Amino acid sequence: MAEERRWHQQAQRGKLWVNWLGTGKAGTQLLPLYYVVVATVNTTNTIPQTQTSPRLPHQPAMRLLTALLLTTPWLRAASNVAALRHHAHPVPRAPASLMPAATSFWADDFASPAAFTHFASKGGALVCAMCASDHKAGILLRDARSPASAASLWTADLAGALYEWYWRAVAPSSTASRLIEYWQIGSALRALGLGGGGTCVRLEHWDAGLEDGARRTVPAVNQWYEVAGGEKFRACDSGLSATKAHFEFLVDVDGGAIFALYLDSPKSSARREWYGNRKDANPALLPRLRFFSDIMWAYWVRDNPKIKDIRYFFVLGISNDQTNQVIASVLQKKGKTLSAWPGLTVGTESDEGKALLGSPNGATFAYFLLQHKAQLGYKTISKVTIFRPDSDDDIEFVDASLLFHVVDAPEPEPDEDVERGGKVNEKRVDSYDCAAEIFENGKRIRSVHRFGRTGRSD
Image (cartoon, rainbow, N blue to C red; front, side):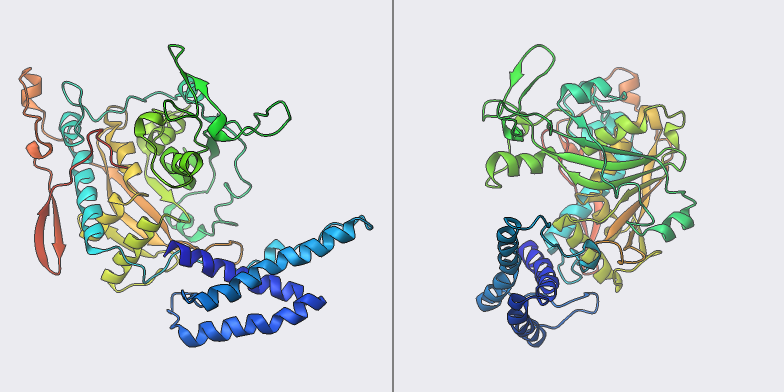
């Protein structure tokens, strides 16, 4: 499905390139080829009403035609390179404003029943952990400390720790702060009383300015660093190296909101940069300071006298396939389509809300709350809103966005055994009854989400 999306997006760009090439001889000859592609797509596909353009089928012939279309820019570029030998004119490029909007969200690409149940079960467990005491949440997360605790090891502003673990702050993208003009969420901001201001942050897990003796950028996989104790880690299977991960987000202290924009975790980046997407990296080889929830916390707590006033978590322009599949399933179950604000809101007491919370783009916000109870108090996520941009005029990809609503949770009963110094049974993750009640085809099932041995499963 992800491959099909990429082909679809490239086909849209192929039309733009053909139209542009149409000003020359090569383009004139290729225009009929494009219309053959479009005609074939239109006659072999049923276009969902939620899509803005045809989907590209898997037929080899169609892929060949599209590949031919996609090679035409190189042909035109080659002719211009030759011309540059005699003329000091830049190679013409298609205006960025003409690039057509595409969508990475597909309304008929659903999560499997097993996947939906998994994410709903995980979301239910996270709701329990947010509302439970720190000790009981620690039991649920299989924390190895005694007594168990859900508290993060990273609690301060982490300025020194981030640098030590090779995170480098760089200039954010030009689109980061343009929540209304670029991200097109003005309706949501106005409805929630948010001004759209804040501090833009971009952290990268490598040094983009590091060069070798020939003034060439050193690849992330060849960048290594030292941590406390003098132990050196480098890019090989026996140690750690830079992953080229990045987190870009906006922190609005006054509005009590955090906006996640561009996210590429060390886990996914290491898979790509170290192993060419052939296998996952051993978690022991990744930086210990690697979760987005901890990175967010570092910047939320800095110079913030109102750290308890967190109200909203946004994740904009979602490209994660699993999260998009959960969103499509929720919309289908509710008989809705992806729409602009106010979109669709579901409570986390429902299966749909639990699944969104347990999705890859939702769990990190739950961890932000449940791992900082001492600083934030008891907080939980009460509901999740699915919506799309107000307009797609200024954005290249039209993807779904999620808003997680934060509210105060009632303070749980004290842990009597812990207060008396007694030993609590921690052998089983369900020793603290925190099961998620999930419904399939109207039938209730009881599911206990079992976190991994390291506690976190995101």
